[in-house]
Image 1 (cartoon, rainbow, N blue to C red):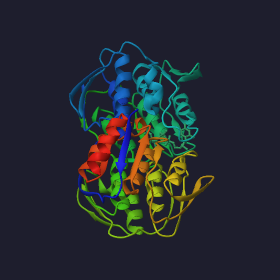
Image 2: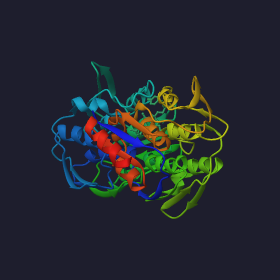
Image 3: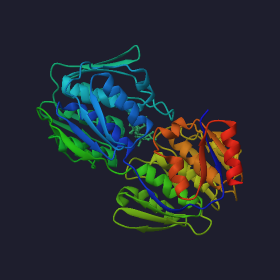
Length: 430
Ligand code: EPZ
């Protein structure tokens, strides 16, 4: 079984390069099948979720050529099916973006109901409501969602909740609808803006992405493009907290500091120093950090995808901290693992009450989902002794070369498979 083994204690020091945004990449890959002309996507993160989506795109006849590790050329001129029922696709959330893109281009799509990290009930009612508002007949049966129409027509759509997925999905379909669509109460996340910019580079007419009203004038067809994906806000944020929790000094390269403002603000509040440059940030933590209160919110609020990382850091900070999760109801599953490492955290409903402890001790733990898994690695980096982390498949969904990047900053971490590998690691690091 693949695991990470970590020997805690080293402050992280040095430079790390952030890759392309996974959640933008998933929307952009899905959007790339909306033209029959070739599309080149650069700065694509090489993570499991993008690999699975590419596989799904290939399963319906899309040709995806890897130019290099982070560049693909997509040719969707010979799509021969509008049905995605690949076994793998159920494992990722973003499979549902193929509904929006195929419905837009072909007026018909059938996609297996999405899976993804188990962080809550994750309804898709707003996606379906949006497609129906555009005139599609939408049905959910036998684990498949199907959407079909003869004419996709623009409409005025009010999202009942702020949702990244439904905003992107409806935007995809509306791009090729007849007439004007207005999405109100739209999500404003950087990856929503990136997908809109990508579509505009293909000839779409989308305005207002990044605000809560997105206006789309449908166009007849889209053309090929070459596009580079924005840096990953959450990967960057995770390394910022890795610097903070280990009392390190890390230069985080290839980021958009504006996207990281809510994260930087919290780090400064708890005692870190942050230096901001054009496309990098330096995070320095010279002393024990202090407590705070934080509530996850849609962008520009503090991201739910950073909640486990901040909670883990606060579990070692001085005083009592309160972390409130307002987006997903089941995102504290890692707390049990932190308790086994010596944390003092009580979860009541969607709130974690954290009493900072002096240190963690190494343990055998499991990653319950992607971001929680990353947070547990952070805990292991500072724990006394060895920690093994199981179920790293979750972490690999969204972090490219996670142990390698941590190692480059001085962490003692390795991906291992056998007891022999573990013994070898222990001998090596002493
Ligand atoms: C996206 O999930 C991300 N995934 C998540 O990242 C991220 O945590 C989340 O946005 C919030 O930022 C991808 O981009 C692939 P939502 P998504 O729709 O689109 C409710 C990670 O770790 N809702 O913005 O599924 C929903 O239950 C992952 O990288 C409805 O009620 O999230 C939640 O409470 C995990 N009805 C809230 O909206 C709907 O139809 C926000 O969900 C859709 C959502």
